[in-house]
Amino acid sequence: MRKPIIAGNWKMNKTPAETEELLKELKPLVAEANATVVVCVPAVDIATAARVCRGSNIKVGAQNVHFKASGAYTGELSAEMLKAAGAKYVIIGHSERRQYFGETDETVNLRTKAAVAAGLIPIICVGENKAQREAGYTNALVEYQTLIALEGLEPTQVRHVVIAYEPVWAIGTGLTATDEQANETIGVIRSAIARKYGKGVANAVRIQYGGSMNPKNVKGLMAQEEIDGGLIGGASLKAPDFSLVVNYDK
Ligand code: PGA
Image 1 (cartoon, protein in one colour):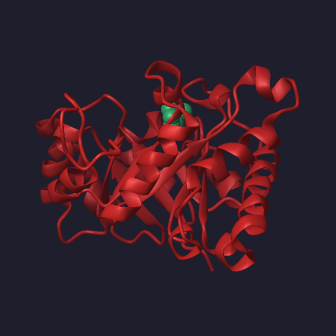
Image 2 (image 1 turned 90 degrees about the vertical axis):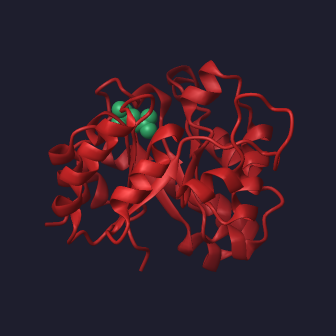
């Protein structure tokens, strides 16, 4: 009942010319996809990506957004700017932003509200690091990260957001959560949403898994009941690999 969503997170990779090349190669390979297909590209590539993907089933996303509409925030980009450039989605609170750029749960919440207000669909990242998992805090942490990110949104807005459960220890490491671990934690996230916003909303929200997802492990992960898609880093940088992930059900 939930349409799967496979999103590429290109991180700090690809110039506009390389973006054009990759997306031209990708378009025909994913044209028959059953999942929603998104590529979250560097901000300077959004306009190029939107132009190349126009008329195709590939949607364009950004990787971050500032929470103010405009003003003296050197280096930042507003939700309206990203939207005008062609973005439909935006990743918020990726663990690399939390780890390296001081992103907090509070700013994730502000960015989420700004994105939703502008009509962008946020892909909100949550997930525990290795020490937190080993100490048994995973469930409490992802519940808290999720609910605080959504604080202040109406239930009708919450149903359209995308959550990405990305265990930090699985990102870019080649380690993946087992299918069952990922399914269980995503179930915990969905239950938290159900308690606060109701079952109907929780059943509508798409929750992805992310962390070393690739053509080899995608089938097993996507076979799990709670997992509605993936946020793909490394394996999204080559069109053939990403298309195999997108077309996991073929
Ligand atoms: P990875 O990255 O697929 O390279 O582990 C995922 C992510 O950080 O979103």
